[in-house]
Image (cartoon, rainbow, N blue to C red):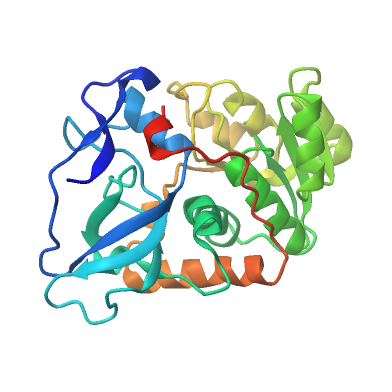
Length: 306
């Protein structure tokens, strides 16, 4: 029987248990992947703590991994046993030695991308892609603000935005992290614990504000993020690491300059195999060209996921 990390009750990291699970066989349209590297993402914490509701309890967390196809079910034509693949979308279940999932959720992995790099970049990288290319199309001359610029998504997105020709302002919670942000594409880096990021953004932009703010912090930064936008600017709220954003009066959007607000998720941007492959191809292009470098900060055995 394969082993996995299983969550039996919502709560802290101590609720991540390493145990055997029943062996699953692929059904029609499914494949079984031997996971060789598994990605860690903040969304995993949302499911563990109940901010996002898992389909049922117990459940195996994780959405991102890379590995080798071990078995295929009926009606799978695009893949074969032994193919190198990666995945980064629903269903949950990546924190396991093997995962069974629909074949149309798989991405064929280029030979030049090794398994740990793939597991570190697919979910975060495709998130960066929809943030910069689809939620709003960032291009040469735009100025953006990216919170948590030294985080997993932030490092990739800020490099990518810099590559696209944008002026990138990043925030982080320490001087060490602001230096990381500068090394990963930020033209300006603000330590929001020591500086008023709204005031700094206004200074940097000569009072104009930015075209887009990317905010995965949530409660602590939401109001300030709106203040940083230029008229008709867009706030992309894509996470809540500091807590859920409380309800607010949408009239603020008109008062502050006909602002736009979106709360996107990756699955909505890769809902078809064609969209998924297009997103992955764009990510592979910027990584293999050297425009975006993928950092792997730590590696743990599956048993030590907590």
